Length: 395
Ligand code: RFL
Ligand code: PHB
Image (cartoon, rainbow, N blue to C red; front, side):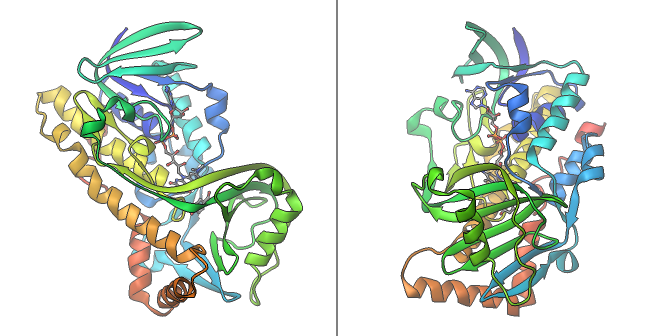
């Protein structure tokens, strides 16, 4: 088999890139190790920036998002039992939209299937030859090869693509945090009409939603936590303690239908390409989930690469391809800084009282200062994408 672009991974990065290439008339094959059902059900991100929403509409797959997405102006912050509303919309314009990642993934897969374009599920990529563009994968117990001009590594943090870059050329910047997020999906009423971060001395709790009667909530827990130690009552009790206030409604408890643990990490592979291989999304970088940037960065990487590929295939000019990492990295680092700032301010970082004083001093500055909130809001609602790539796929 031969194609112009082999796309490894059918998460947001791979599927958005595939759609952008389709609209430019560039061939691609998507290889995904999991089943279609699995990737369409995996509970993950939920907050889309304004530029991400704009891209979804430009790609012609935004009907369900328009009907079901919930536009939010900002978020609530609760500490010292008091709630503060950060209305970023009135400060910087635009909205954040709550729309589950797996719905976006399902919308993109449906569009690809209805265009009759190749997407292979159960295709586990084992090797990438970065010099020739040959991808080796296993499917139904057989080994296959796919030859491509370009390989897009969109296979997430634990994928194989990044490891195809020789270690000596890798420039990885990495930090782990000593805590994880215990996340639940529950049939219960959201505690506020927009997302809410609660900074409590026991640690962070996050109250988000997926609909009027479905909540997505997170608790900061120590690394190495075992889910078996967190029966439903313990989760609800701790969420209630951390979100206690004198000015808000009490927490609604309900049936917990999904639970998971996610470690927190800041990671950037600054070498984002090598020979014919390009890394996108979580394959190239991970942000801690505080601030909800991960999926959005995957979409901006896809926009930059699709523009560069369009130019290369149409004219043979390599300049935009060669500048891929340099074009993406400033926006990636801006999101890293934002996620790190939110992470270190909202979590209990240590037992050291100095840490706590600094965190609460920063929280108070955010509440007191409109300039501080404006700066936060610019990044939360979405910095502009790196280059004037948009509309390219509409011509
Ligand atoms: P994905 O979504 O991990 O997709 C990678 C795909 O590659 C497949 N794969 C392979 N396929 C073939 N061969 C192989 N060898 C393969 N190895 C892997 C996988 O099966 C998978 O389908 O990466 P992508 O596309 O880069 O997308 C990144 C986002 O998924 C991620 O950044 C977000 O989910 C992060 N994130 C959030 N991002 C936001 O923008 N807003 C949020 O509100 C938000 N909340 C979150 C989050 C991530 C979380 N966890 C679970 C880490 C909340 C949490 C708790
Ligand atoms: C979510 O709704 O899943 C969510 C909200 C806020 C975050 C991360 C995830 O910071």
